[in-house]
Length: 203
Ligand code: GRF
Image 1: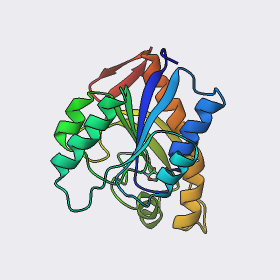
Image 2: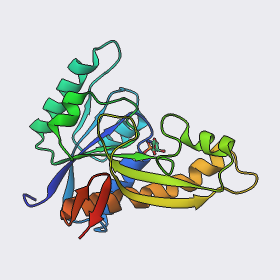
Image 3: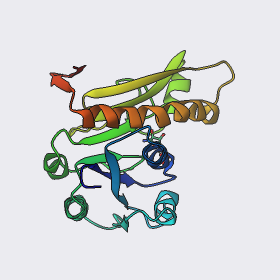
Image 4: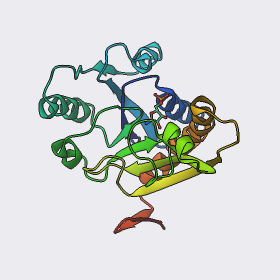
């Protein structure tokens, strides 16, 4: 379908956010989009096996032992080859080089399992439990050159309950991630927004 905007998904692991995006397209909860290619930097990521199983174009571009700039250039070339409009990081466990970010200005999204700017980086759910917050959630944001930092598009909250551990809180947040990511993609593809400073403003 030539009118659709093309998504490129980057992942390193399980791929549940990728599958949530794929399902929301298949079930027409997210329209005007298609997944053009799924890329993993790890050959054994379950998410890339799931992509192949569902007959999506899937590419493994191994990062191990390679310079970041060189690895990223190959990913950018693959995304451009598939004419990707919007890059979605979905559990992609690598920092992007400035060259990668500049190749898709305001066209790369990431999802993070906390209410940014709280708890950036690894193990955000464990950080939230250890800090003792009563609420956490997830954030979909534009990617800039700093880790977990760009302009926020969508956040969804969850309570942190007494007795939660990293696993139970992660599961509660993940449910909200699966709603937040398709919503953020729809918002960005609609073009009905502007960015002023750090603020995403819907029109
Ligand atoms: C999610 O918690 C996401 O927020 C974080 O990595 C995890 C990826 O999960 N960036 P999945 O691979 O999408 O299931």
